[in-house]
Amino acid sequence: MARQPFPHNPIGDLLHEHEFIAGIVEEAANEARRIRDGETVHADRLDKMTDFFRHFADRCHHTKEERCLFETIRQEHAAGLEGLLDELVDQHRQARHLIQRLDGAIKAWREGTAARELIAAILEEYAALLRSHIHREDHDLFPITDGRLTPTEKHRVGEGFEEIEKQEMGEGTHEKYHKLADELLSE
Image 1 (cartoon, helix red, strand yellow):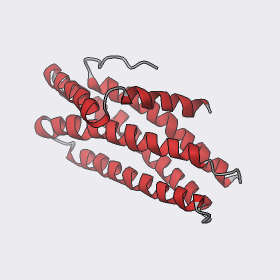
Image 2 (cartoon, helix red, strand yellow):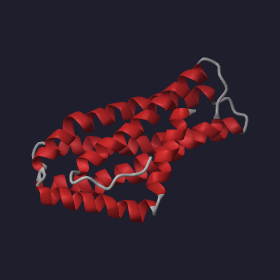
Image 3 (cartoon, one colour):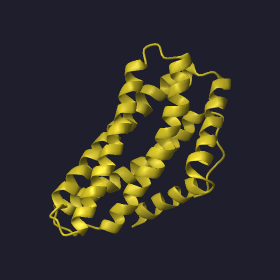
């Protein structure tokens, strides 16, 4: 799927990214159910998911939120939102930690350790965390933020998003992860 130019409202871009992330989160939850039902651990598929979560969800999406949107909110519009912003950043950290643990569990499984249950548990925990996190942003933070940011601030945040994608991800990487998401969703 070809990436559209940033809309005038960067909140729309984040909401769109949430759709892709939420789809892969559901695939992770489905993978956990299959493992618990006794199906084989598909380590290669799990590697693709962790790659997506590490690079697209965290390195791209969460970085844009933290460095651009959350910073703009903290500087200009933080009244009543400090606790929510701190909670969301902490959830980003928790998600990073879970992906590190998942990598370790997949490696252990490949080396012959009985890590099936651990892999399933981490996938379930990650899915629950991201579902809750996305809901908080979509229903609590973004509607408030959208109303508080001026058009100039929205433009500045959108430019920051573009810069992060260029610096952190590199040319074409965003599209690569959209393609990976489509691939994971169609398997």
